[in-house]
Image (tube, rainbow, N blue to C red; front, side, top):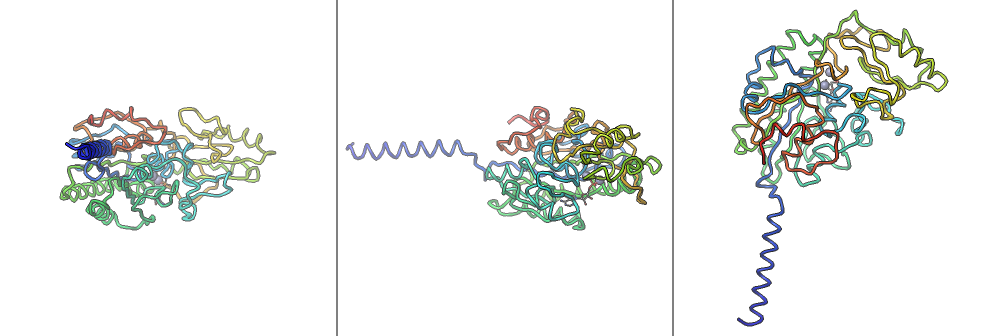
Length: 410
Ligand code: AMP
Ligand code: ZN
Ligand code: ZN
């Protein structure tokens, strides 16, 4: 063999080896990247399936995992919790501390009713799981998940929708299925989607009402429709599904209401933020002591000063939680003014109240079968999803250790 030939053969061998090693070390996203589709049914209390006929959730439990319950973060409200589920962070750490709040560092107000604020990325801290995915080359989609209507860290899910409360649930199913039918190179491997019931019905009629049970049965049937349509796809066996919720619902009574303005003078405060059963207040400096001395003695509520909320609630240290944090006792309502509206269900209470706990069901190749898991915190969902999708997780408050028992070993 001539010197030139030897050189060529050695060069080809080294080149082939480098290509081989490179391809071994690169995850083949297109072929092996798993799928995960997580549905949140707002306000679906952990024990609703024990009270009505839910064959489709039962089917997931039989073929996969059911947790005793999913514990929300405090305050057990919709926006703080959906964003905790997405980021793995306590509300104090991701910044969406209530459904509506004042951000002193921005001198700006956030409210779920105000589109401009919901779409302002400056309110959102942490790293939602879809941002983690997109950063690592995994395509994601979100159908109305809190925080996905704005570019957090400059990144949006590849597919996302502006919140449209009235968009029919059946069509949301078809849209998610359509995403999963996209050509491989455009198909999302992570999808988060949302339906706003049985929360609204739970508020209106109360968690023990027949109307809630009818809604639960209907939503279960939609889960069944989704599974049926999913099973027709060629990738059906590769898709992991989670059906879960942001919080539960507790009963409240029209004759158990605390009206804060009957105790406190509006003029003592610069800010009165939140709504039943959660408020945060900022006192004028000269009225702080007087306000606190009254506030801490109001019956049927808990009130804490900033940085003095019990450790277990992981709340009240973010400047957005202002000087005082207020929550009604379970089964009580707290309002600033007496209003005419009476509701029979509420959430936002202490997350040790199990009425605030949500459902968790999961099934697919990553999950064990017929496995019941203990109650776990919703901040553990981020590390769980990152693990299933082979993503390097951001640093979060949740922990994979708390949920690793439900997944099959890789
Ligand atoms: P709440 O029960 O007060 O915690 O809020 C629940 C409500 O949040 C639902 O009825 C939805 O209408 C609303 N909601 C959920 N996601 C969004 C969103 N992305 N944008 C605006 N409103 C939303
Ligand atoms: Zn909710
Ligand atoms: Zn609600």
